[in-house]
Length: 131
Image (cartoon, rainbow, N blue to C red):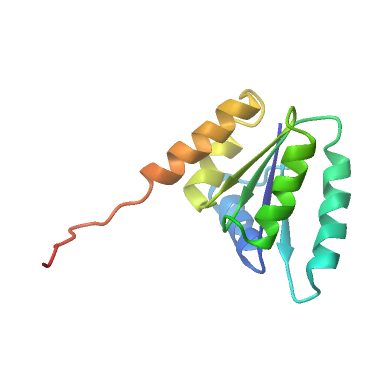
């Protein structure tokens, strides 16, 4: 299984940079970002990346549900439900944990794990509620 991080400009590359610093480089993780070159350019680059994955499974992590990267990834998931899953709300703990599971985990298990990590990593230290 492969991992593709698809986000708006700057986020995916930042997540991979942080991942590589903390856990080392992983060739099974790729990224693509929507930039000011536009949606058409993003779609073309996305299609090129997905061509590389046509023989295997890919989990796509996006930043914003219903944002352009997510919607384009979702189109691929609908066209290839047997080998593509899309999870929105990517964060660094998600990328770090999943990078260790890419070889052994199934696509559906990895998607479920991504959701679990995303939910469990949201916390506030010493929050004081004010009414």
